[in-house]
Image (cartoon, rainbow, N blue to C red; front, side, top):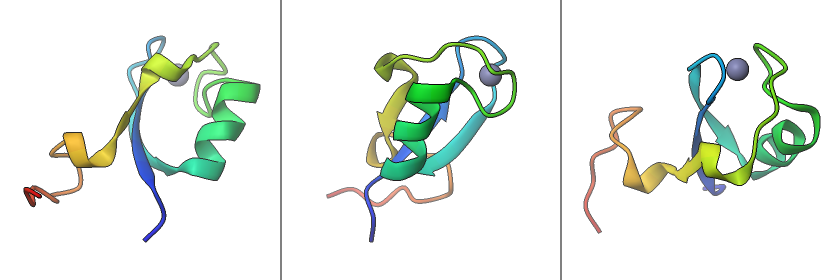
Length: 58
Ligand SMILES: [Zn+2]
């Protein structure tokens, strides 16, 4: 299972699950939706979020 993150855009409030490769691309190119600048604070590890229905506690 690749490491996944929840991307929560600070500019347009889109919220999507991304993997490490997409995260790197978004950090470099900006938000995929609004092209706004993004920093690492816009990503949280998916395990810390209920998004996607995965609420398993470890
Ligand atoms: Zn955006």
